[in-house]
Structure formats: C-alpha cells, structure tokens
Image (cartoon, rainbow, N blue to C red; front, side, top):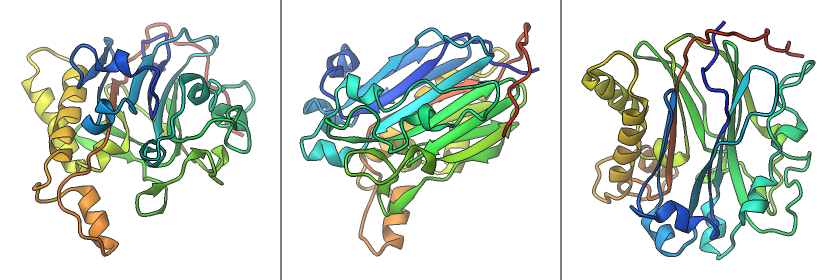
Length: 301
C-alpha cells in the first residue's frame, strides 16, 4: 500500500488577519518556508497587504490525532475583498470554520462537519470575512479532495498531469467562499478521489499561483528543478520555492505579456495587462511507500 511517510498533519493557511503577520514577515518580510523530507511549502505575501498588516500566512503542524492511516492537508485562503474593506478574521475565527477532516469507518471523509457546519459559517457568525478552501486527505493509495473556491490541486506523474482541479467561480474573480454573507456551503465543494502511485508529485496552491502561471509553466519549473537535482529523488523544497518565486515575479510585472488572469479578464471584456498581484501559497509533496502500511481505507458510501 502507498502512504505518505509523514505521521503528522500540515495546515497551510492564508487569510486577512492581523494577529500573526509579524511571525510571517520576520525576518525576511517576503517569504515563509516549511520544510520536511516529503513535503515543502513556500509563501509570499502581496507587498501591499504586508505593509498594511492585513495578510497572514501561517503554518501549523499539530499531531495527527486519528488512529487511521490518513494524512490531511488543508489550504484556507482569505478572500481579499474583505481585507480591502478593512474587515479581518482573527486566528480563532478562521480556525473555527473547520473542524479536522473526518475519516470515519463508515463514510467518505467529506461531511458537513469536515468543512464546518451545514450553513458554512460554523461558530464565527460574529466575525466578518470569508475564505476559500482546499482539503486533501491521503489515505493509502487514494487522494480524497474537497475544493471550494479558487485554490487548486495538481498531481504530476512522470512529466504529465494526471489530475488538475478547476476553480469554482460565481463570476469573474468572485470565487465560491465560506463566510460572511455567503450563500455557499461546505457541501458545495467539489469532491474527487484520485488513485496515486509512488513518486507522484502533489501541488496544492492558492489562486496566486494559478492566476499567474499556466500549467505548462508550472510543469516547466518542476522539470527544471528535477533536472538540476544531483541526487536521486524529487527536490520538493526547490520546486515550491521556484513556483512561488516565478508566480511572484509575474504578479508584480504590469508589462508581462500574458497571464491566466489576464486572459480570463479579456474574455470578460475587461482591459487588463500583466499578472495578478496576490498572496502566493504553494505546498509540494511527493508520494512515498510506507514501510509499515496500515489497514485499508474506509469504504466510500
């Protein structure tokens, strides 16, 4: 059986929040990196948000409490419209949107309580703000994905995409989201089950990556990093760094000839040039064989 060798859960979070900005911005003020043998993450805040203390990207690595052989990855991304209006979410409110992803003995992992309560706002009705979400559970040889909004996940196998999620948008630049005045619910999330193999590369990222880099550009960066690797294996930290940096360069260049966001804007009849300035969060993981596989995953309903 395939299983990621980690025995912990990574929570990658980005939202409009004042509380943890100082942790992110010191000392480099432009990048945060989370390292591990089998996963890596890189994040770059939008400079305007960093200066105004409205952006937060933070990483949590709590113990995985479930006894089941599943690993949970979660990316929660604050919707910037509320930040521009001066509305913020504190850490407690943001974490309250979700309980931990449930991997039960008798049901698929996605339930109302895996993303929040059924109305999508959980216990934070008194707070203002909203978030998109991409939750991934790796259980044996299956990736189980719940994606709501414009974050995304890609799976690469031997230089080819075997999976790429699509963003959920109500209209141009208006993603599905959970939170204040939103009619979207956790059950609106897209649900996928993906069979993975040893050596597959998983990329989970915010729209800051996918709005600025095309799929072939992402693949190019992955292959360049692998080609430059002198030792066997996948240079996951180099990949996450390279993707975040290249997306950041495009996002800050108003003269960039083209970007995915620009193309979509033009399709809407809007004039737009260059990349899209935004926070950029990227998590890269590689699937490895567990030398001590656990029991089989729970059956799907």
